[in-house]
Image 1: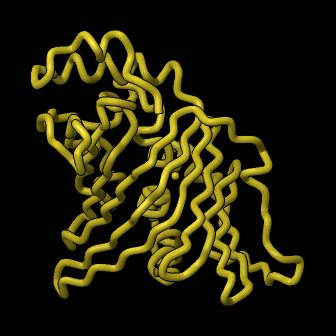
Image 2: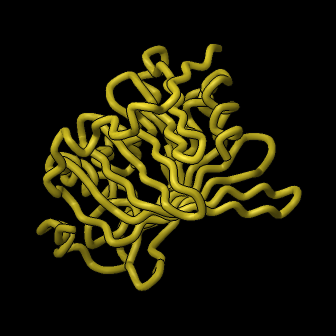
Length: 241
């Protein structure tokens, strides 16, 4: 998986797959008034506009599965994710192997405790694209979705006991479509945060499935949550290219 991450980071536009990694409140009055099963694309986008105004942070359990279609290979890892509206993000994977992905500002860190190594990548040249994918569904307004994607309302689905609205997003940018052909996102109607995301890689048909559970909306997350808390003896590496 580390090799997979490094490969996409170095590729043109490859940050999309990484930040695709690369991160509860009751629904608002408008959601409560919405008749179940009668969402339209316009009403969903309006709801996302409303929710975006109040989103500040998120914590959740995360399960990420990379599927390689041609060999039917499924690689799954799980842990916790912490996201803040200002772009800070940390994912602590604990199973099957511990490691941390930390994003602060223009820096992305990949910490591998077993190797006692931290790889640091500069995101500055791809900042706007990184932010777009990092916060996809986490405070993303309907207007922003409509600006970056052709948005299709698939419908309502019951996902693990949660009522969700499923959207299909086709990137409008040629650069983005060279990496990701489409994204499916399931928005939990009780929190208006993602219950699940599915990123389809262009050409191969391989995909990344990310499921979120035990979601807390707008918890207090201090800067301490996003510090580089690894041993002083760790080896620092800044890959080139």
